[in-house]
Length: 60
Image (cartoon, rainbow, N blue to C red):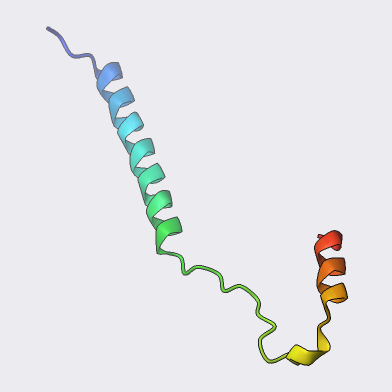
């Protein structure tokens, strides 16, 4: 069986592309998760009424 240069180069190109995909996936995994914004300490608990919570639910 004869291996053609063209076929070998195509396989190398495919492997290079696959390695780049793996690198990209690893970089995404290594990123720190973004912290969710928090209102902790920004609003006093007594200031929020049930009506305000219901209205906020409707607006989302």
